[in-house]
Image (cartoon, rainbow, N blue to C red; front, top):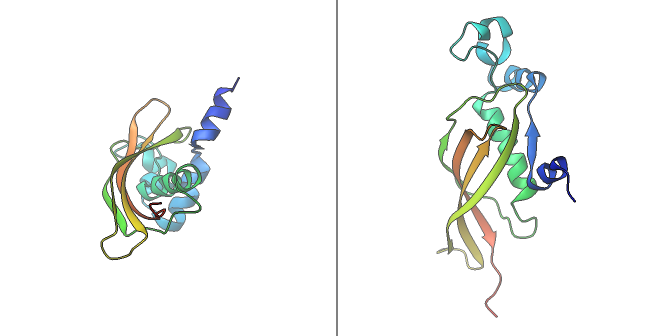
Length: 144
C-alpha cells in the first residue's frame, strides 16, 4: 500500500517555502510582494506570494521529472496561454497535471512530432495556480 507521500512523489509535488519564494524573487523578480514581508502584508495579496516565473520553474521541474520522455523529448518552440489565476503562497504544496490536447507529425522534420499539452498546476486545495499549453517536439517511432 502506498502512503500519500509516496503517491505525491510518484506524480510530482513541490512544497513551496517562504525562503524559496524570497530567494527566487531576489534574483529574478524583486517586486515588494515577493521579497518584503511587511510591504507584502499591505499589498494586493495580503502577504508574500511566489513570482509567476517561480511557479513556472516549479512546473517545469515537475513536468520534466514526471511527464517528458528522456528518450523522445527534443525541446520545444514555446508555451501558449500562460496564466497564473491564483497566487502561490508559503506552505503550498503544488502538483501538476498534463493533458495532451493535440499531436501531429512535424511538417518539416521527418521523425518528429509536435505535441500540445495542457499543463495545470494545483495547490493543496485544488485551486489552479498555473495553466499553460506547452508545445514540445518529440522523436517518433517508425511505423513498422
